[in-house]
View 1 (cartoon, rainbow, N blue to C red):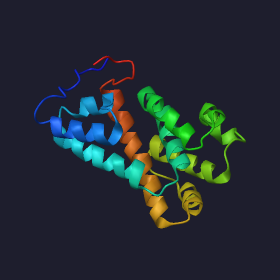
View 2 (tube, rainbow, N blue to C red; view 1 turned 90 degrees about the horizontal axis):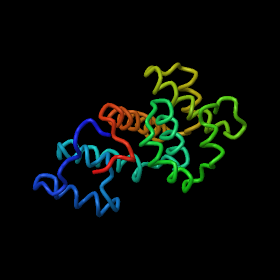
View 3 (cartoon, rainbow, N blue to C red; view 1 turned 90 degrees about the vertical axis):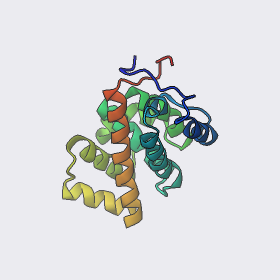
Length: 175
């Protein structure tokens, strides 16, 4: 159960953003139900994550591997529950999702995916990224634009998991 009650989605301050979220995403997930206690924060969050998920040129399979790995490292089941189906639609296999905890020794990931996962692990576990890990990820991305988008994706989903876990937002919560 979440540590705070979910926001009143009919509140006049929240309503315009609720309408936008429903129009863009189909429903208001628990994450946004919590964020809507502060419509200003929820609006900024929505803009940022829409840019990461829908406007970035980072390939969808890599984006979803990053998100699933961050969720695993940070113990964020809500994030994983939301993104596992998306990962599968983006071409990540169920076997890869099952092997994420042991990706380094798995033959299911190619060199590009391993470079991205190593970068994700370094950013998530240690914040500072060792130069060899950075250089491998940069080579795997092939452009500064993709490197920035990769970095922003790892950072964004660390933010998401930390918010979710601090407030104990989970899929099984009832509104």
